[in-house]
Image 1 (cartoon, rainbow, N blue to C red):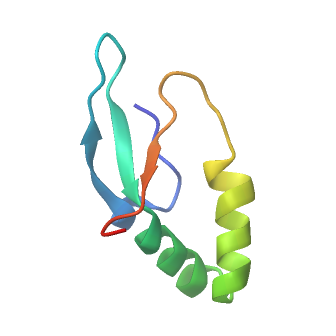
Image 2: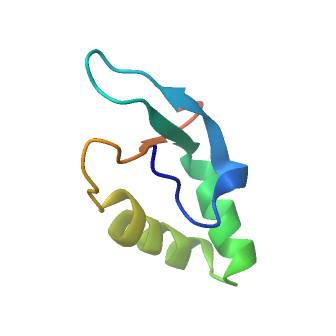
Length: 71
């Protein structure tokens, strides 16, 4: 499984898919919070960074899943 550097506190579990490798599941709200506190970003900057650099990246079958918890 691929793990995103520095985002361990946002891990909420493991995703299972039929005939596919397990993938790490992250809480998007927690990711945004981590980016804001760790990298001193505004919420807007963190959202933009997340969308372009994190959620927008494909790393093959083990790419993590990004979940909007409670939405």
